[in-house]
Image 1: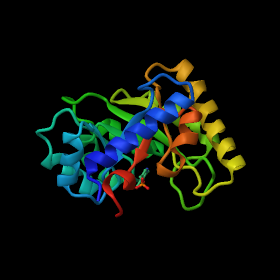
Image 2: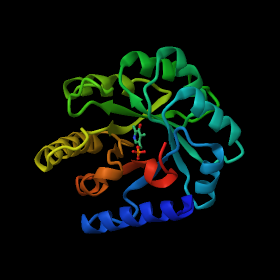
Image 3: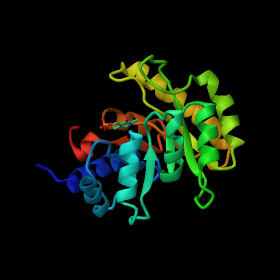
Length: 227
Ligand SMILES: *Cc1c(COP(=O)(O)O)cnc(C)c1O
């Protein structure tokens, strides 16, 4: 069986390869290691292998891990799961990023609850790009309104867009979805400073996502094993 360090190395190699074949600069795509449901010891193993960005889906579990690993001050903790409004406070107090912001109420609460001694909270807007009933995120038509709202929140730093495209799409549908995301991202990237993140791409679509301009891929199972 492969170790976490070995699987992490394979994931990195795949990103390097996809980035090169897309003729993009090396280091233009970050790897977010999605550690949901996995023990702190697994996060430590990845950390020791050089990984610094981790994604968690569940608020309570994520907060406990952030607290347990609080000595590792150079970790970037990303909340990537849905957040109920009664959970925004602990999220604002413990995470560095929230990629799953999908409404004004959540944005306002995260802003108001971000502690003064911490840097502004980095946020991405989650888009439901394939309009799936089962998925969180806003529709493309609502994007502009939420971008403007978040830009008015002094304790939030709007970093970009996160999306989970439909599973097992046809090649044509996948290309269309990823192109739409790339266009939306480019539009805001040129007009807003620090809007530098297009978080799209998981194990099954890394190559296509990177070809279409993803700047952050989120990988869980391929690094930490099955959940
Ligand atoms: C779980 C999860 C991932 C990682 O999924 P794997 O299939 O384990 O690689 C990525 N993004 C989000 C939003 C997730 O919830």
